[in-house]
Length: 330
Image 1 (cartoon, rainbow, N blue to C red):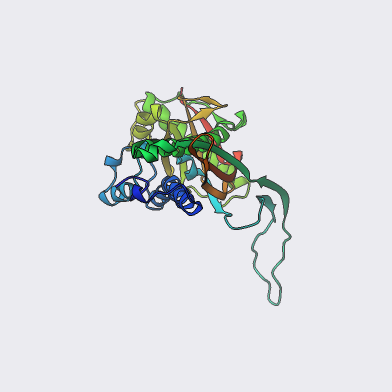
Image 2 (tube, helix red, strand yellow; image 1 turned 90 degrees about the vertical axis):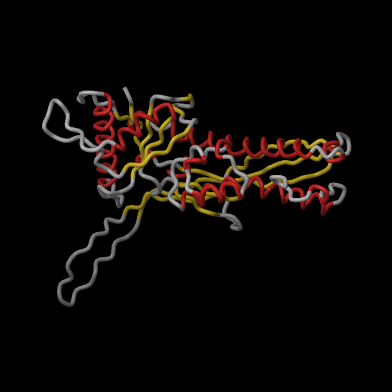
């Protein structure tokens, strides 16, 4: 059985119906990574590494969709709240910095609740359209070189998710210098310094958000986007148990609800970065709007004797820099 088609002998690109079925199968194949990643995140899987690290039921899910986790990276989605706009007429979505001043007070006997008005600056984020295409040589179908079709489709899919990831990792890496957190050097060794720096960043981030009116607490989940080169350091810091530093009697451990997301695509000002951590409170005003998932349209090119498949998708993203910190590691 092939990864995309259960029966290649039934492929008929000489008719409109046949080309439509071909495009449908390709579109389903293209969407599989997003489906799997969503299910994995719903199951609480946050670090996408080697499939052998996962429980049996998770591996079954991955294998069902013929997905090699090495081909895509959408860990960035864990920092954004997604909204599905498929089927709507909206050209984008709106966000508002809402200010109400709402507070609850004791009602005097016979009194009424005070009604507050809502105000704030509105932001409109339009959907952008992204597209790209590949040609399938018709001779591959005649000669039954199915592996050529499979490899071409896999390349198509990988390119889509790679380029989409680059857009969002670039957005994260573009936060301003006002969100920078310096590396704390007061610890006795690198592990202590890492832990102290993470605690300092988390405390500052949560305090700032609370002051701005966001509903956060000391237990609010915080995540760190880390390049894989810093994975061992971050793993040690998050796993450390009550270290007693040589210079003081206090204990050192990560004091907040911090999780990790690892990527090969961490960027800083558009350039590859291996020495920065990006900390954020997920969701809130970090938004991704999905208007149209990757959709493949196909037609036969009689001049080139090829089947041309063009993939199109529409989405938009908004990053609220107030929810982020860029953490130095030296």
